[in-house]
Length: 287
Image (cartoon, rainbow, N blue to C red; front, side):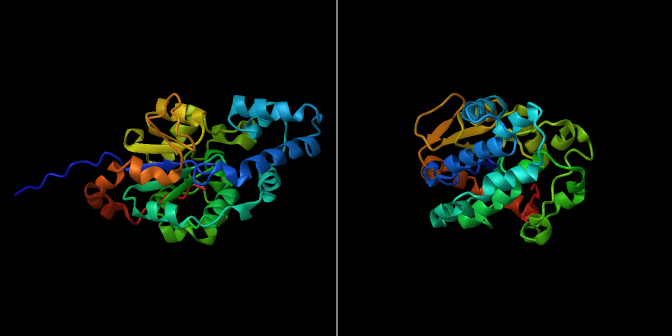
């Protein structure tokens, strides 16, 4: 007798990182903003009385203040900026989260982080939270804004294992070959940063990670990112508030509420097993 397998509703969970996997009360957000303003003042020589408003205005208009500064024509090294902005953050306020770890490890679908932050910051946050082995891939600043020497052959991307994700080569910044050497997405070449909430950033992420948005749940604390995620075809979950915003299918006060709010994720488990058996060795190196 022939057995019919019903296709699972969801195949991937896509997570923002900062203020989504941990609460805003950690203080990292405020510290990061202060560091950005200090960089603008001391490294870019922007007038002190202009810095706070310009920092906020650029964030609102371009997705990140860094992207806005580049768009205005300021020239600075991306790695230097990230090292200054994130290097002095109070990471000690982040503690291991065994509850979230248990939830993530029980999820049958692929789990991918999608953040505007750089790979070093992403690694520190995930490590502090005790979630190093909970994700199948990371889409971060270097993924969407690769330099030519960061490109990796497609066949390597498609066969990368979790062991590779934890290897020295991954930590040193392997990136997707999504642009295949084309400089049009290279921020260092064109002075343009690709990041959320632009629809282009979402579509690029989908291509890199082989994501079907219609079968993916997206978790983010930013209403702007949620709105674009919905436009891109994702199932959208606002995290950090119980109040729905435009484009959100659901709002969760905490990331810990996933199991109660979305039991269908686990109901997909038996249907997902055959797919996972075929792809368990695959992970995506996107940092």
